[in-house]
Length: 123
Image (cartoon, rainbow, N blue to C red; front, side, top):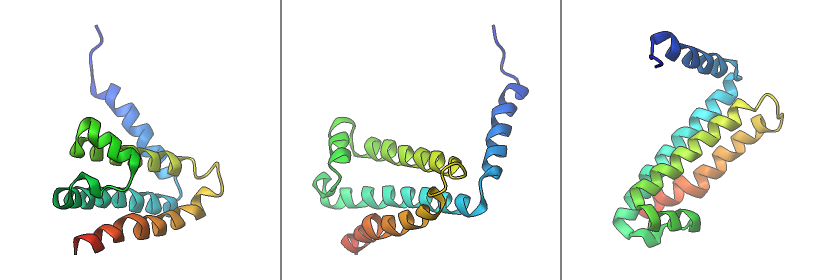
């Protein structure tokens, strides 16, 4: 029988912490901004769906997932998947040179394509 000790848990946390600090600060910043945009989009989408109904969701895949598992669960799944994808992309930014400059554009497109339309619709 395997027992859980603090040394068993500390090793993965330490590896994640080292990997996080190995990422260039600009890439870390862009990754954190994108993660917060995911959260903001999830909150705004949830508010809009409660006000306008599920039909307000324009993403066909997310709409289909909402029909299967419910609105809140679908938003949580989609946004967590988005944050995991952002982490994966940022972790590989050193290996793939075009990722770092592209993150800034992704933030701009996400703001104008997801956040601002919901803000406008809800105001």
